[in-house]
Image 1 (tube, rainbow, N blue to C red):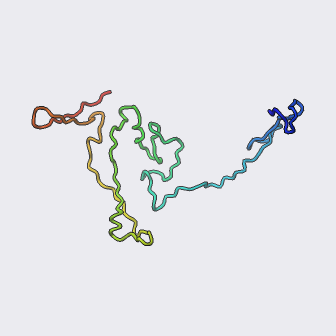
Image 2 (cartoon, helix red, strand yellow):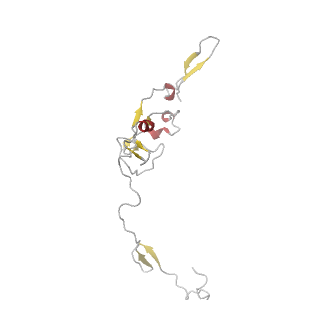
Image 3 (tube, rainbow, N blue to C red):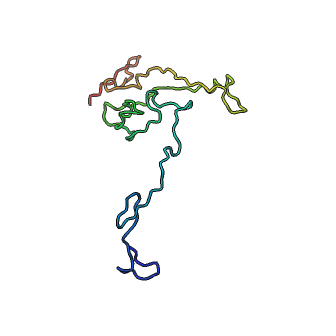
Length: 174
């Protein structure tokens, strides 16, 4: 409620009418006047994600540009891009779900230097005659980077003997 009128006079019960107002898309009532929002839904706003030649899906079986209805979060997400995936379930204090070591699971190499040596890069136009290939390299399995509750790791230690002793850690039971 105003404490002073525009002309400087004191506000009284009869001098100021504070009944009324407006509301967006609210319909008309005795006190409120409806005001249109002034927006038309034109479909696309800003940029749109397109599955093109220079883009790849995060999951090959998943939906490109998947619009999640729920947050993608640890211990909450069971699907990624519409595909069942338990990777985010590991972020908890539930011992059976914990992945203790960050191991390299896939190694992709972009053969940039190979393409330059082959003469596929035109230094004057800044264009590729043939884009550099991307290959998935094979990795040797690393047991130490894949511990489990039953086989949490190995221990190597030295005793008085000339050869070091190699033992397995006991399984975790709690």
